Length: 458
Image 1 (cartoon, one colour):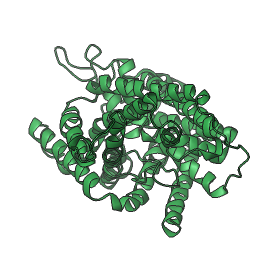
Image 2 (cartoon, one colour):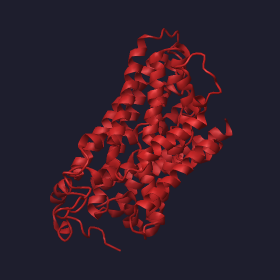
Image 3 (cartoon, one colour):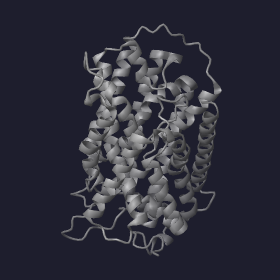
């Protein structure tokens, strides 16, 4: 097996540079070796993905249906408490990406799975790949707006489950005197149409960078959602009181809700590999920009959603607007826009899931279009079948998915840094990695406790 550092730009001299020199070199070092003349390598400066499209792809990986549940989280933690928690989680998410990028530069690998290989051998690679597959296919299926706990879902099956259950109502809102038995109001039919006509073709694209256009569209849908939430603050004369007691238990649910709202780590390295003129500092700027813009949209929509309904805010924000403004064309268009944003996120999640499957089962085979298409088709069929027929197992996926989310977001980056970094344990990087690891364990245990409690007391 290739040793850490072999083939990297620092190989043969990184061990002898001062800490400052190594840090400066890593900031500008490319992830992949220079492309040979005349080649069309993914990381070639002229063929790479632009900074803007990379940010859009990362934000599309971050943002999803979870934005609908953050006003509910604010109602249970207060404005100040929510702001502090959201800022902490966003900072930790950016720091965990920083650790992943640092370890990739040090080991000269280009995938999350290979970091597991360098850290703990083949079992580490299989563990990381399995975690990615479970998270991206199933994940926490407890939809934030269908449960009291507010734990969000960021997986392909849960997204398609949202499409099946909510898209018919969104379409019906634009029609008067519609026939409830019409095919275009059948959730299963709409799910199959969106999967075949939108999700599968986009998931077949050879590079994640090609999704920059659809990711930018998804981003503008989310901006539109936030703007409408701000504007509608003065359109609803809600006779709702502010002085309602906050339950400690519901406040505890807000922590995993916010923690999982910045999960994008399975898409970070694929985006990194296709970034134009890729370097650690450039990708970190992409990450900081994506997380910063997501934080802004999260906070604005949560704040004005909360200030509209106060303690009476629904666990799914749009339900409150539907109740007070049932025939408002703007609200109906927002709901449809959010659903399309959710649909456009599914192909992006396909990429890391497919890569993990191929690394576990087909790593011994040469890359081919046939394998690419078959794996993509298989994944698409699986998630559609789950969304169609097995939504009742969402508690099991929620239990497993909350664990995988915590591992990918906090535990693995911290653990890999502790294992692979050459710095002393008392160094700033390793102490930060240790703190991230401990925080991940705390969030994971809290999530598991809350989900089990929800089982016992539905």
